Length: 340
Image 1 (cartoon, rainbow, N blue to C red):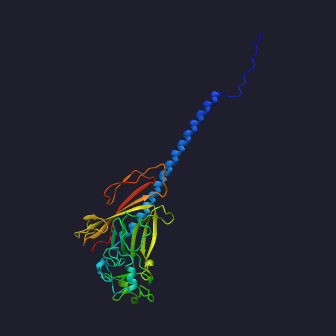
Image 2 (cartoon, rainbow, N blue to C red; image 1 turned 120 degrees about the vertical axis):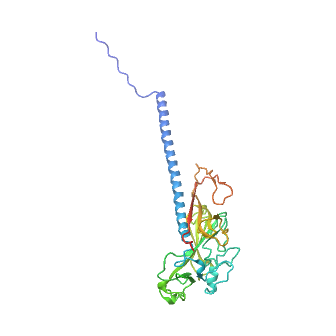
Image 3 (cartoon, rainbow, N blue to C red; image 1 turned 45 degrees about the horizontal axis):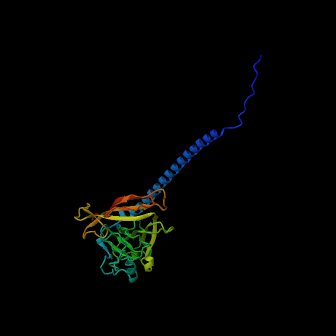
């Protein structure tokens, strides 16, 4: 007899146990994918943050380095002591300047010597204050405990026409003279417009530059972000408030430390490093060590900065223990124009 055919069984779903096993496996897969995504995102954010800090550090250092390298540049002359109408701390005002010009040259004297003719103190082509801002011209929210760096030099370019609100330096191979041009005669190629005893083909007219670098506790756009700022001399005839332009270089710089390499015995080699304001009498500054501590603009709450920072003249390490990422950039910059 033929074998009877059994009716086929139909499975309409999975059992509860099978469903739960499948759900658990799926959850593990999803958890793994989310974990990988979060780790990749955190790594990207950290890398992007460090790259941003490095970019800020490079920009800030490049701006400072240009001025430091060119300090003590006076055009055709390489000796500040051969330049007429300069004036250092305690020296009488030069007769060539009017009282208004004298006032604005002194508007940024030191607090210990407010009559210091800051802009025309050419003998101190590089200077500063250690962990202080000791200048009478006000800083924009100076960050306490940071160094101040100031630099003096002639502009690297010769002007096609002069500006009656600027101080100029006329130099020949023999000497130089500081002057403010008359508003009715502004052609540097016209002998009548420049100091006597100078011939335009054999001499050069250049703007005098005086700049002050410092750290501010606030940036232009955010009060909670520090910034590197610069005061730049711009007006010899205006009021005290107009003599210097205060401009932001880059936000994110929270510390500036400086040390000067000085030549004591006159052989143009560095004999020692000193803090700003401690250069020995008669020594020449031939290099500058710069440290910049760069801080991220925003907190990273998954990160704690437990680095022990110690650089410059710090007597002991400083650990900040907050959620900001930081880097320290440093550079030793040689001053080109230091040979007598």
